[in-house]
Each structure stands twice: as C-alpha cells, then as structure tokens.
Image 1 (cartoon, helix red, strand yellow):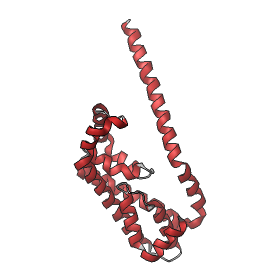
Image 2 (tube, one colour):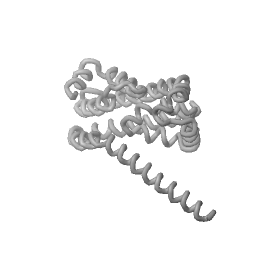
Image 3 (cartoon, rainbow, N blue to C red):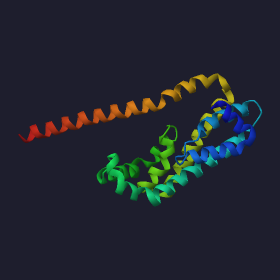
Length: 204
C-alpha cells in the first residue's frame, strides 16, 4: 500500500490527495487518510507545499461529506424505512437517532471525522436523519479543518518518527471502537433492566 500511495503522490500530487479524500468521505474505500499522512511527510521533505496540501485536503473533505449528505438526504431515509429492519434499524430507533442529531449533531459530525468507518458514513447518516444542511456544513467544515490540520502538521513536523505509532493505532482503532460500542450497549442494557426492576418493585 505504501508504494502505491507514494506512486500516486509522485504522479498526480495534490489531485491524488483531493480525489482520494473526496471519494473516501462518502463511503468509497480508498486510502484518503493514508494519502494525507504520506503527503504530509512529503511536504516535510520539500516535495509538496504544506499550505496547498491543507487547502486541497480540506476542500476534498468538505465536498466529499456534502456528497454523502445529499445521498443520505435524498435516498437514505427511504432505504432505511424499507430495509432497515434487516439491520435492526426500526422506525423508533431512527426517530431516536434524529432526536440525538438535533441535540448533539454538531459534535457528532466533528468527532466522527476522526474515527475510521464513522468518517465515511458521517455525511450519509446526517443527511438520512434530517440534520439541517446549514448546521451540517458548518460543523463539517470545522471537523474537516481539525482533522486535516492534525494529521498534516503532526507528520509535517515529526515525519516518519510517529509513523510506527500511528500504524499501531490504526490497526487497533476499529476493534477498540467496536469493543467500546459493545461494552456501552451492555452497560445500557444492565441499567435498563435495573430501572425496570426498580419500577416494578415500587409498583408492587
């Protein structure tokens, strides 16, 4: 993967970064973040200019998520209403997701930018649950700026010295997220059972 990413950067420069991040941000499996990291190391070596790198990467991230938002807005809800039951998304759960996005949608959009898988589905989910586009684009732009600046400046100033740490982190990032989600659901289930038992005892 490293060789192919370096080849893309050598051949196509900033446009390789732009299109990789753009397509990754609405669900197409391309190595956008890996390309951004490699490009930042290139910039630290004088092969690319950091300001241009930041501009191309940020623009791609914002536009890609907005494409995802449009996909979710115009088609996502109908698909979930028709097929959601097959993946345990009931109308009640969809309604709760909409409520959560109304209350905490901005922070969800920002935090999801830094998490694998969630980053790719961020815009689609926001559009599906009906998050207002103006609110989405504001927080999407802020999240994209934070994400691009974090990875770009980290590798621009520290280069390959943090590469091994990041590779290790990304290897265990998704399992950690999944384990955390399962643990959170387990705790929630225990609390619900405890609450129902307490409520039943009070009635008795």
